[in-house]
Length: 197
Ligand code: HEM
Image: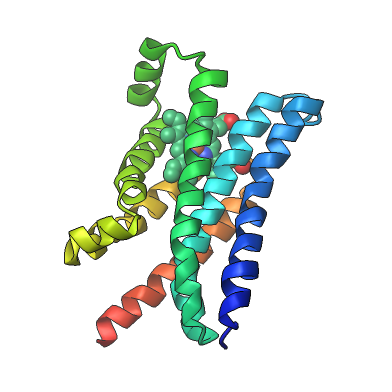
């Protein structure tokens, strides 16, 4: 399946860009109009974390999906998806630092050391940062083969993100179950292809 080039660059990619921005706009509107329920700050932190994880998984889906539907152009959406995942995760972190900890750095440091789910979330963001920084065309050229090696960090990062979710979830485990199954499928597909070649 080939999307005609003008439609891909002038329609598909901009529409995708706007769709990915909608959750952030939803929370911005929610703060402005006070429509986020009884605990808006928790809703924002959790919602941004959810979107960070969902878009991270979507980024991993691009490569197998373009093979399944035979649409190589899809690969050109991967950087946008990856950067959006980072955007939501950074906002999620910022929400925690601001609304949960009021930028009390001593308390934050204590939290990172004492609460394993925070430690793991922090590790995931720290590891994700070099991937976001090196996502430009110039960096891809400069890093050559090492770029691919560096970006395969996305697999352990996704596992850390899922563990982070499991460690904080209480009663309703439906979402982490769905994301874990999805990630297991996506990682198995890669492993299978690696073994086969
Ligand atoms: C790749 C990085 C990360 C991802 C993908 C991620 C994702 C998530 C997800 C999916 C949730 C559950 C939301 C829900 O309940 O529906 C969550 C919760 C949370 N995360 Fe993260 N997170 C990441 C990093 C971090 C970091 C660095 C921190 C803070 C240092 C953090 C702090 C929290 C907090 C405080 C909650 C809510 C816990 C609660 O309300 O009980 N996360 N995160």
